[in-house]
Image 1 (cartoon, one colour):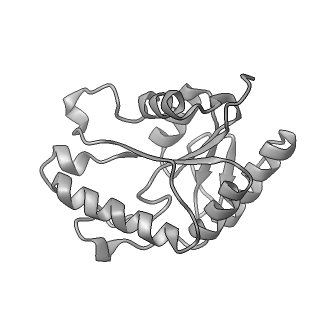
Image 2 (spheres, rainbow, N blue to C red):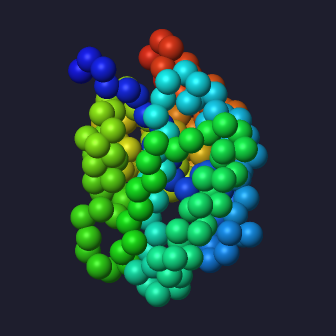
Image 3 (tube, rainbow, N blue to C red):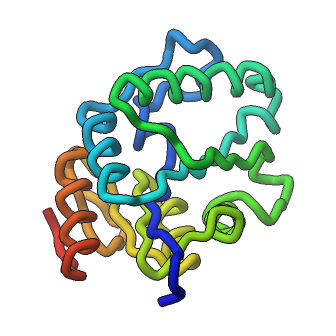
Length: 184
């Protein structure tokens, strides 16, 4: 462990922090998932950095504009602020899958760049997501991973499976406190 580096909770956006509505173009489409605000506030309170890492291929595919994506992001920030949550960073890949870029998850590039810029300890950090690409990016970056799967079923192998944000928070706090791994 390198001194003075903080642990972080990296998280996907659509389907993880907010309801997945496809390619949101309007801020009015943004709704936090139940428990996300409260859980992120508690994780921030114990000293974790909060970083959103999101593939936003709708930009590269021409389905949404950069300005629409920015407005949606600002709405996410505003809704989290109602819980006292302030994101440390928001990283996104605007490229379409066929663009072959190096930043799109499952690449760990966004996590690595944020860790370098913010002074984060990846070995003590966590990646929360709802898709295999999220989990793979977290694993490649050296983070422990939590798959958010409300139905409890998944073929994705993560370090832990959580049905909701309360379970995500409990698992991360258990790991943060005493290194435990498991399924909630």
